[in-house]
Amino acid sequence: MSRTEVPPGTGRAVRVAAGDLVRVIDVDGGQVGDVFAFRDSGDAELTEHHSAAHTRAGVDRLFPAVGEAFLTDLRRPILTLAEDTSPGEHDMLIPACDPARYKALGAPDHRSCAANLREALGEAGLSFAGPTPQPINVFMRIPVGEGGRLSWLTANSRPGDAVTLRAEMDCVVVVSACPQDLVRISDSGLSPLAIETVHNGGTRS
Ligand SMILES: [Zn+2]
Image (spheres, rainbow, N blue to C red):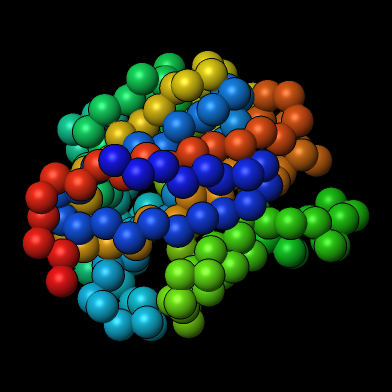
């Protein structure tokens, strides 16, 4: 098992083989994480990626459930939600926070999950030329109310709560400890996340 710390407001990338487990841990509780996944073909330029839209269409659900897969833009399973020790609320409707979002909030130089994604990929020697994929927002609570209205609630995950994802193909997983502190989605200030990977004897080339 190896563990990667994700400091508050930053992002980190890990590479895993098909069959490996990726655990995203909310170290102190109440922290939203943006999770991105790309097929790892061995090339530095990534193309196929997790798509929230294709996943919703594939599983007939708005939000992830244990045992169900996340699909790529080519409709292939890339990750499966294997285990969840949190209260179980995660979002697949809201895009990653980005510079335009913070500019509109009056903080143009604020860190963002979109920039964290590019930074984390760069540190791993990888890149993705497309627009920021819509992430799996772990621990983020966006319930759908009457008439389809969305509410932005504060994360209620507890210290040490974790979601465990099983890789269905060799992939690169990026986790951003969301720096959003202008809209209160994380519980109390920004806190770290951690990524644990468990190698299951896959045959990564
Ligand atoms: Zn964010």
